[in-house]
Amino acid sequence: MFRDSPQSRLFLAVLVVAAVVLIAVDARPGSNPVTALARGGGELVFAPTAAGVGLVTGPAAELYEAVRQGPEAADRIAELEEANAELESQLAAARLDDGRADQLDELLHLSGLGSYEVVPAQAVTRTTARGYAHTVTIDAGTGSGIRPDMTVVNGSGLVGRVIEAGPRTSTVRLATDVNSTVGARLEQTRKIGAVTGGTVPGGPEADMTLELFDMEAPIESGDRVVTLGSHDGAPFVPGVPVGTVDEVQVAPGALSRIARITPAVDFSSLDVVGVVVGGPEEDPRDSVLPPKPEPEGDR
Amino acid sequence: MRAAVTLLMVTVAVLAQATVVNRLPFEWGPGPDLVLAAVVAVALTTSPAAAAGCGFAAGLAVDVLPPAEHPMGRYALVLCLAAYVLALLRTNTGFGGPTGSGVSAWAAVGATAVTAAGVGLGYAFVGFVMGDANITPAAVALHTGVGALLTTLASVLVTLPVLWVRSALTESDFATIQGPTSPGGW
Image (cartoon, rainbow over all chains, first blue to last red; front, side):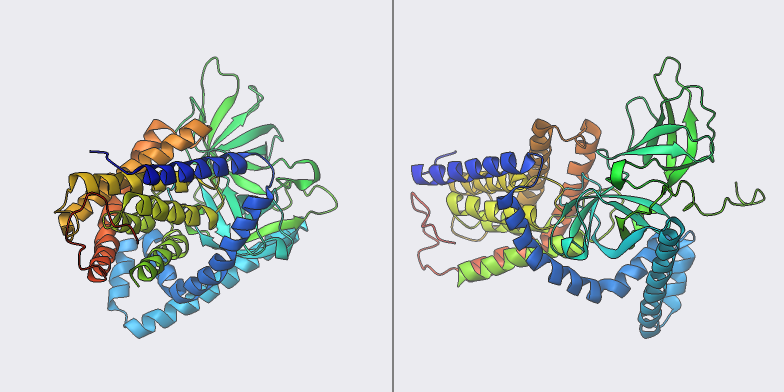
């Protein structure tokens, strides 16, 4: 059943050894000249292709987004069916530009509030080959001053951090990834904790989970969480909105308090993002948080 | 000619996967794997060594293209082994029709489904060995199942055309004669 010539087997063995050696070399922390060169070559092909695909599929992607995430998706589909195809595409293209402009405005507003220096970029991939890791690729790299361990934000708040930067593209690990941990601070009580992507052991099903180190700290749903910030702003600059507390889990005997966090950013419709390449002179604390909503709002 | 067209088709599959499929925001995680679907078509119509080479090259291309979220070589390893085993089974057991003649469409789709599930598990296993925190039993079950299903659906659009082009471009008049070893070549 598994008959094969020795040469063929030898060839397979060589390939397997090559793959294992590559994995071992690339899995080590720090950058490696061989893999960096290979990734640079891949990027050389990827960047123009992705830009072309973005141009061609922009209106279609915008339509897909509108249909998928609209709260009244059924009405939206009916509405779209009624629309003339040509008008539809014009409308979508216009809305795409408007939407991008709005997102850019929000981004500039946010960076202005915290006096951050940001480089705008666009997300060009959203899923990965096997779909496990929550990462996106953005169309800006070291050529724009982006380095690994820089904070990525958009108009609503924290997106993630740069884990790999090539000349023209960078890979961003989203804050919802299981491997992502962000030092966080409650906006009001200034208590610190850590926001982990996904679910922590013993915690509720969530996109993000906050572990608060102080068992006595008052915390309730609706409290807002901002980044704590790290030394020299790497990997996270302080004061960026992470999300709001959704549900606090009371677990007797736990060493920390666990709360489910609703992300400030809508990760399913990520488009224009900004990479913080320069921080403010002083810690902006909460200054980038939008004004607290009025009590007669939906909360 | 056949090799050049195959190279072109696999390259297009890799680029389409990296720039079009990966661009779509799938909320459930994985999307269809066009690269795997194309490699299955090549593996069903070539010798085990050539299939392993093709799987390795295609997998390495996926590893090299952004996003750089997993170590380079991880997908190349899994895809290389999967293509080799598939080609070996095809040449030695001759499932999906006699060796040399065309593979039936159902056999090709079935082979894609089984390979997609196997590659999903293999990729997860490599991640498990390397201590990837994303690999949990629930996540592996979900991602492998959904990924294999979507890849099987995509195989109708990828595997079957690639198979058809490759069998249409068969160069040798003796390709229909089953010999002790495959003539090799792409």
